[in-house]
Length: 472
Image 1 (cartoon, rainbow, N blue to C red):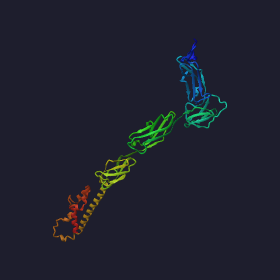
Image 2 (image 1 turned 180 degrees about the vertical axis):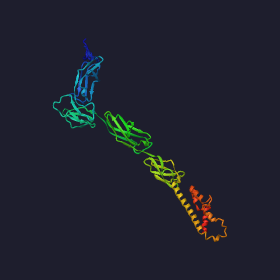
Image 3 (image 1 turned 30 degrees about the vertical axis):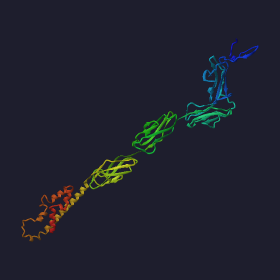
Image 4 (image 1 turned 90 degrees about the horizontal axis):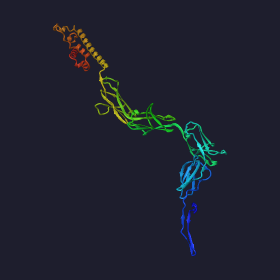
């Protein structure tokens, strides 16, 4: 009995025969179990392996029962299965690969397959800041003895450089993007790499929402936008020169007139900061702080008029001023100023397109002033002087004619006094007569003064003088 091996597997039959004939038995299958014995690795496609291409490694092995496959690069397991595929292979995939096949009866490791990836590779600095001098280099994993021409691409568009180096001096944010190089004579091209250019905030703008007119009481959002790399880390809001908030958005709920003004946003990152242009916020609101001023101020002469002026804080400015007198329901005037013709309490109502407000009432007072007193005093004095002169003239005329009247008065008691002369004699007048009247005129105010000067109200002096004049 020989030692059985894998080659002994197969179908076996027995044929029996004698002198009368023969017969073949049914087939018997002999299945010899054994561990893997022959393991090999192939690569597809064959030939030069260029970086960026797709490569498939295939493992072949015998063994019964069927085997399992494991792929090893160096000493590290990198995959399972009969095939191992690398899409867009790169230079880091270069190395030795082996396939290990195994079943329950044993395992076997293939011979090493060396994978040599030929590549073009663009080298870029790790940290690039706008303004730096930057050089990109197209490196190869093999020698190029014939000094080939290189072609550079940025974001898929060819550049003018044709050497293995691309100079960006100084580099700007517009230079950021994807770069790759190619050597067409060798049918080689590099994978794309990204050039990341860092820079401080630029192109800062401020927007307002909602747009259009801003009316007091509404909610308003200011939003700051900026171009920066890395992105802006801090936003600070200013009204005038005062800091009022932080964050990309600044919200004012129930905005009021005091929020009107110029707003700016300062954005900053680790490379610098920039201040936006000013955005003017114009808050519209109805009239406020409505008040009335009087000119001239203080008390005014009886019968004269004063100017009333209405003042108000409003945006847009007040369009209509209406004047009212307390106690009345109808307007008495309109306009920024009103000339009040009489005493009383007045107020104004200021109105614009967003509302109206009434002022507190002011009172216009009338009094007698010193000038009026002077006029009345002079008038009274002239009146009194006229009376005295009239009395004096009557007495002189009376004395001049006394001689002519002697004969006519012989029958008259010489001791009797002339009633007329007595009436006209200032010395003989009692306290109720002219002198006391003049004193009363000088000291009487207002209506009493007019009564003193009224000829009809004077008694009995006026009547005495009238009688004397009528006699002559």
